[in-house]
Image (cartoon, rainbow, N blue to C red):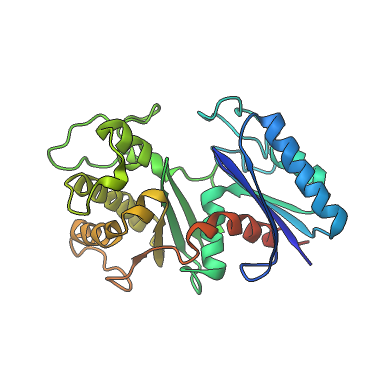
Length: 291
């Protein structure tokens, strides 16, 4: 038995053939360019794997927003996205046709959350949140073992939160200005400060506002869904790991005793899978697609 996973990102796509983190059989990385070029290369890789070994299911974890409503005429499509040329692209049905196996389709952050729940920091939990802070801010929110659903998937990285006291910067999100992504993502920080963020020390005042903003995102998640744990990763956090402790401290202060966190002092943690959470997220989705 083997599972194929496609993690489709804004700059690169990671394809994995595996049965889990300890049984990765093949991996390919291709650049994300135009839809036809990228999907064509993905189809070629998947076809090559299928010719050598059976693929029991396919998982696709992609940047969004995406249509996750199976009854929708545009199910499996990328919706309105700033990624040039990708709006209204059919990803899921095209790739499933190439494999000819059951398929599961979701956001990259929901996939990463499911991988952490299966193999990492979310083990034993049915309610879990995974936040990634990199070029953007994404949240994978799992409630009762499943990603949240309504008319679409959650986009908590785009909620507006109270500003850091004394800060009136309007933010950089082209849709919402001062939403969490517009204030605390790597792209927002580079636009605002014009510096290589890796050169900023842990004591730089820049991080005070970042920690505050992300703690307010965590408060919204806690109040709305009460996950048993939050994993916090992505490039910004990986390069500034001191933020995790500061964000939890700000969260506790902001909750002000109204809600007591389980495992206080270790409620917010780094993802145990690290950079593998994304690629393995697509495998976790494929495992859910088994007939």
